[in-house]
Amino acid sequence: MIPAGGPRPPAAAHRPELVVIPRTSDIGGLEVRRALPSAGRRMVGPFVFLDEMGPAVLGPGAGLDVRPHPHIGLATVTYLFDGAILHRDSLASAQTIRAGDVNWMTAGRGITHSERTPPGLRAAGHRLAGLQAWVALPAEGEEMTPAFVHHGREDLPEVDGGCWRARVVAGAAFGVQAPTATQSALVFADIELEAGAGVPLPPEHVERAVYVVAGAVAVAGDVFEAGRLLVFRARDDIVLTARTPCRLVLLGGEPLDGKRHVWWNFVSSRRDRIEQAKADWAAGRFPPVIGDGDPMPLPAG
Figure 1 (tube, rainbow, N blue to C red):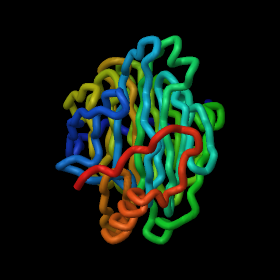
Figure 2: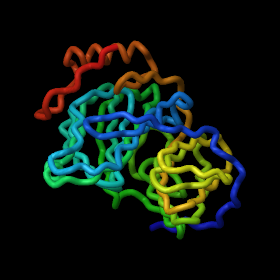
Figure 3: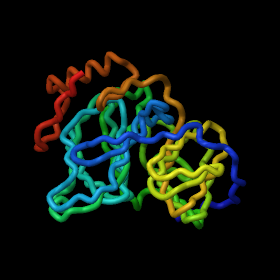
Figure 4: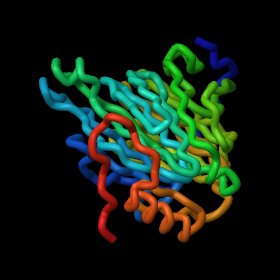
């Protein structure tokens, strides 16, 4: 652990600019709650998508089955609190991610991947919980070469604030820098607080939001339960105080360099690029995930 150091600032009276209540959907047999994009907020920094998976108890024989599907113009961030997922992609990557690790897949000009429960866990049954986010690439990097990187939890820096602890998964926060390579200035951090603990929100990123994973947190006297995305104004001094033991994820960064179009699994600064990706997937021009079954069809519309 790396000591946080320094005195804590006094509590501020600033409240969230927006509170997003996620909508619920299903992916491959698992219920998810989608916080981004929402009607009130399309993105926070470069983050254009945020799903919470589970928590779910998957019985013997059951599991996650997200068939091969494409992406362009983004990086996917998979981070688990419980369980494991086997990632396969068209770069021939085959990587099991477990709680506290991070899978960072850069789609660039085009990649195909699948996400499934590993065979051993599927046979035995297990719990699964975590987050998946999409980070839009800068316009100049949207057509970069696809890549995949995995970092185990032991590689990710942790900050010990005494009554709170933070693991910085990507970007910089609390005076430390994660090894995860990113294409823009951002932060993604897993924060756990003891009941009554207060943690100041790092001020260095222009756009910041906190997703309440578990427990309840107070901000300027207002209390927010699990399953809420709290979006904060730039430059506001924010202190998060745990009403119960709680877990939060901090995300954000510099504003994007322009509008992004999002359709299905495609993200781009150009509408015509989305149309090209749709045509390419329908025609089978994306690289395949070898030996992983039939790919998802292109949605209608």
